[in-house]
Length: 360
Image 1 (spheres, rainbow, N blue to C red):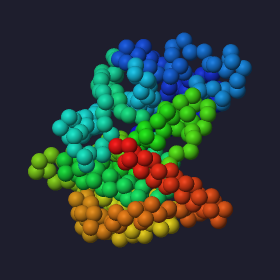
Image 2: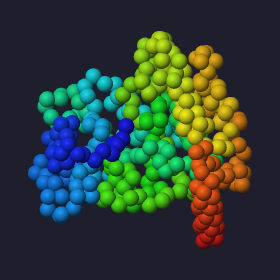
Image 3: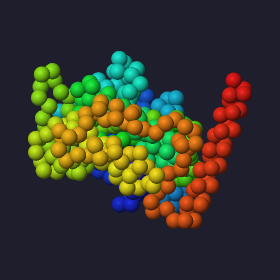
C-alpha cells in the first residue's frame, strides 16, 4: 500500500500521534540513505510560521492517512515508499521472495519490486522491518481513455495473478486499493509522495497526462494477508479481506480456497472499475462472468483465466485499439471535449512514432 493524502488540521503545527514513529527514526533512515520530508525532522518548524502562507499552501502540512507507510527521497533524488512491517508478519518473507533476483526477471511478475529491506533500528521493535518500494499511484489515476489501455491492464494483471499462483502465493487482498502503477513515464517530473494530485512541491496541481503511447506497468502491492502454500498442503483458509466482501465464500465466512478467491476478487475489480464505469468495454463481459461465479469450482484458475483472455481479447488492429472508452456518467459536453482531446493525443502520438521511425 502506498501513502495517501490528508491535510492535517488538528492542529496542523503538531504531528499526528501516528506520525511520531517517523520523526523518531528520521536520522536512522537518513543514515540508511532515505530522507523523510521536512515535516518529520526532529527540529521541524512549520513553514507557514515564517513564510506568511496559509498552511494548506505549504507542503509540510501534508501527512499520510496510513501511519505504516511513508515517502522518502534517496540520495539520487528518487522518491520511494517505505512501509513499516510489524513483527509476526509473513509479508516481508513473501514480498522478498516475489522480488528475488530469480523471479524479478520474469516478464509476468507484476508484484511490486522490493528495493531494500532492513530491521527497524528502534530496539523497542526488534522484529519489525522496513520495506522500500518504488513510489506508485492508483492504477486508475489518471482515468483510462482508450481500449488499448484497458487491454494492457487486463493483460498485465491476469499475467501477474497467474505468476503469483504459479509460485504458490495467494494474495488474498487483491482489491482495487492494492493494484497500483508505475507512472514514471506519465509524470517524468514526478508527483508528490502523498498528495498525488500535486507536483512534488505539494502545492501546484499535476498537469494533464494521457496513457496514449506511454508504457505503464501495473503491480500488486501489500502482501500483509498473503498465503504461501507449502508442498503437499491443502490450500484452505478461514478468513478474507473486508475489501473482498463480494466474494461469496468470504462474505459467508466459510473456509475457502484463497486462490479461487483471488480470481473472484479480480473479476469484481474488472466489473466494478470498468464494466460498470465505462461504455464500450463489452470485451470484458464473458471473462468477468466466468471469474465471479458463485461456486468457486465453476471459476477458472488464474492460468485458465489468462488463457481464456488471450483467446478472446480483441485483435491488435490500431483503429480498434485506439477507440476511446467513455464513462457512463459523462455528459454530452464532456463527451465532445474528451473525444477531441483523445483525437489530439492520438495524432500527436502518431506523429512522434513516425518521426522516431524516420530518425532511427
